[in-house]
Length: 437
Image (cartoon, rainbow, N blue to C red; front, side, top):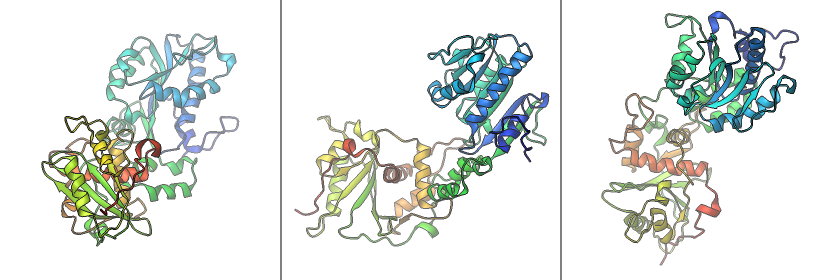
């Protein structure tokens, strides 16, 4: 249970933030790990931690060569998220001179230096000593940044460190959390805690409930409940035959939505329509071994030409199709589809694989149990792929050796595009495809 705030001491800290803050600078809490859900208030906590570190450095007459750092996975990220906040937090009367905007550093009248750093190029950070270090979004930082650079730099002054962030699977961040927990895995000098987004006290419960409707269960647990989720097993674990397979008849005249993967062997596409209540219904699948984009486009036309009816066909392809040349004439996959008259919606860049997978899982079954995507029983290859695509052992990368990834990718491009539509002026052909001749 976090202690109540003491009168006159940074009353803006929530009780959970105060619990983390109060454990600082104890001999048995030299290295603290705070695992927190989204919107916990990690950045504000880091600001207060650095203010205190400055006071401690001056009070204890720490040699100025031992600096105080805030580190993020990249320098750009650190500057965007923390630099302006830091400048507001450090009083001008503490400064020897104006902050260095290029290096994002401050020199204090005590000659101590506060610095913002990116940890992607950690080898370049060697040199000075460290008195205090805050590592933000620590799960996204390589372990070697700690073992090879930051940890040795803390040795001269017996410096302290705080690692904060949201989990990203079973990696070093989880290991450090366990090192600070009571039990046989506990290590001297380590302390840790875990707080959900709701426990942080900065977001209302109805916002958490809304997130449950938009996210799949594992993603929700990771982002809002600060749970360490493994990537072992099935990629589309939210899909089930019992919950997501039901008759989805093709409705003549309804718009078609097609997800497409450009792998040549096989070319894969999943065909969907939206129901009246906004659900996604997979009505068909197209898998063509040793084929190409021209043949796939012709097959879609052949299947969906219906008695003079006009249907609006939108294709959500692999974004790489904007660059991939498929013929001697230099045509790209996307330009081929556009030339056939399809409306093409391609993301300007590849979304992270895990983000695309999270969206797909959330459509098949969100954290609150809502299902917004269903598959017709005749889509046998799709059902098999959704059930059998797995992660490579010990990684968060889908296993591509089985061949199930092509259909899963095709569906993922569509679901990502439906939820995150690209700018229409740049990526929509504004053509309607007629199924009549």
